[in-house]
Length: 172
Ligand SMILES: CC(C)(COP(=O)(O)OP(=O)(O)OC[C@H]1O[C@@H](n2cnc3c(N)ncnc32)[C@H](O)[C@@H]1OP(=O)(O)O)[C@@H](O)C(=O)NCCC(=O)NCCS
Image (cartoon, rainbow, N blue to C red; front, side, top):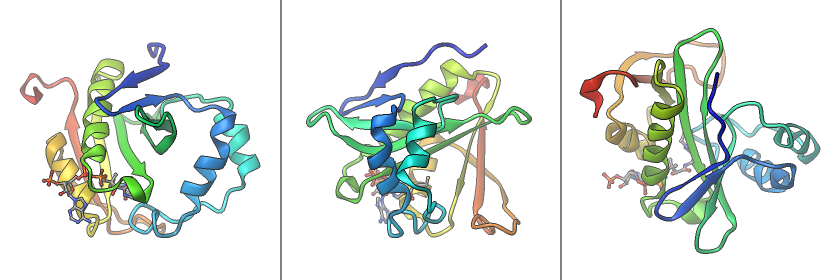
């Protein structure tokens, strides 16, 4: 049984469950080709489609990152926990005006702690485009180890796979 989740705070952000009102923001992020260049492709999904799914969040895959300064959304992030695997995949996407200020690291570390609390029996994982230097730097700070390269017919072919146990005492 997954513990209830509403939000967590980092030094500069609030990470919270989405609502249908976040649909315009998420639609803009998900269809921004520059933003998605090294993390998949634009989804092509409509605001209506996101309004439907964000209004009924079933897991922690699409969380909204809000600035504590402005109270406005500045990104999305989350943890994907597929039923038939031991993975807890972490991801962070910030709007371009927020890049390079240490926020990606701040949010990723908070998600690692959240994963440890919510899914202690799983492994924290990430998949990263080999040219995504900022993500690779953050993966290093999460101390994930590379364990493979994805071979697929999809956008993630050739991406690097990383993982780390969340229940290993050596991980502190
Ligand atoms: C990936 C992303 C979340 C990083 O967020 P960020 O706030 O810019 O990252 P940080 O400022 O915490 O920087 C993390 C590290 O990456 C480095 N870095 C940041 N941008 C970089 C770049 N363009 N090239 C090389 N290194 C970079 C930083 O120097 C830092 O390393 P350091 O602490 O050793 O100096 C952000 O760039 C983003 O949203 N990108 C688009 C979406 C994406 O690719 N998401 C990841 C896959 S889901």
